[in-house]
Length: 93
Image 1: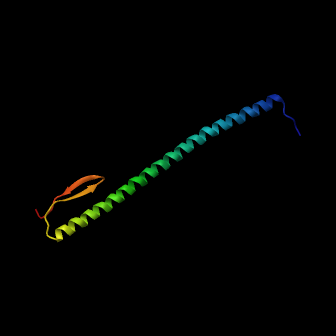
Image 2 (image 1 turned 90 degrees about the vertical axis):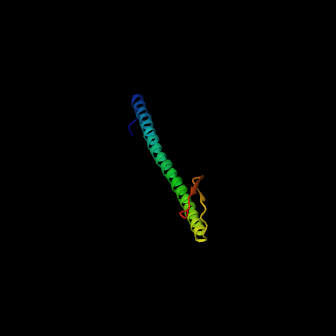
Image 3 (image 1 turned 60 degrees about the vertical axis):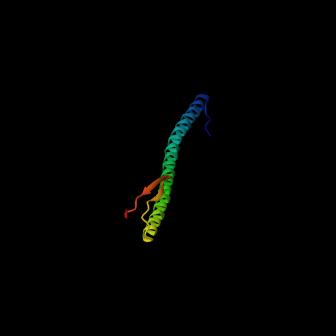
């Protein structure tokens, strides 16, 4: 077995430290990219869920308007869209 002298051991240790720091920086950048992508995907899923919920609210409002019109009423109907009241004018006015 060949023994290491002090300068070789010091150089090897320095190379390991530099390699570990470079790998840590690369890993940090890679993790940042992955986490950023996960955050964007999560936000898009939340937006899609909110839009789907509002779609259901609009369909319920359309059914309500259809029901009101079939009963012969000509009143305006108020629906909500993303928490805002929207007045739908009756086509019978």
